[in-house]
Image 1 (cartoon, rainbow, N blue to C red):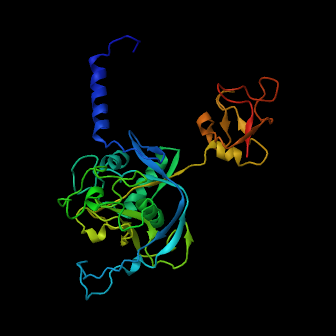
Image 2: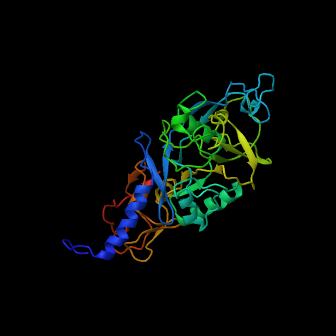
Image 3: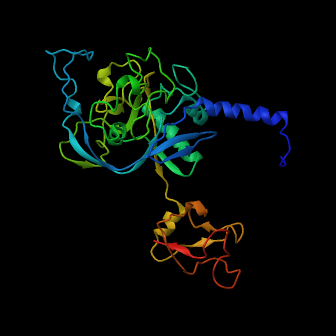
Length: 348
């Protein structure tokens, strides 16, 4: 469309559904933590960077309850699996700002397995741990910036606590849909207050699958623990829309068979940046690596990772003039400069 030209009726018909879809999704509250996204088929899955740090994983709280988790002073402790409290160091990672929604699942998988159909931005549920692995694998094939996976149990609890040390990261009615306010159904994501990392629905709405096998805690400190190497049950965290408050705690550990699905279980993703072209190049000692001209001398292509884009280069790279092994069309042994590019190569 030319500048000054009034858009036709067809253009408006295309624009209106797009605007409505944007308005339907919750607007994230401001947070100091950087945000990014994972590209899906038509939309984006929002992610937040969680800084690395140390925290006390687990709880000293002893909960005596019957088999239905109703308080009972004469009953045995129900939450021994949440102890001992132990110090855990977690490296920086990116995590979904919201649980994965029904719209996002259907966009990627082509179906919606959920029991509840309360709108496209409600969490997808009735997905087993194995179902989630299929979703993650597909997302990893439709975009190239991130490798997505489930959070480890340690990553999940660290992200949920967001620096807090209590059983919850805020007043439960303000941060979670649970038995007292959930009306026995799921709710659109992002309707309650986020935690200090800017993450929504870490407690309540739906339980969230983690990557780990279930197993007892070790008493010693750990760095980026991955859970047991094998097991029978996978971890779920966070509580759900019909759960009592006793389950809506950052330290609460639940578990299920990896083939089990339920209307109360969903998930959120962790996204790991894939090694960009710059990372591969910078990682080679003293050389820029082998380059070829690709379709033309102006389309420089890395030997293993595809077209080089300026956005792929890391500011942490050190730059110096070296001879790049490219077809010499200018006589100086260097490929012709692309707009905005230096004529040097990054050297790690």
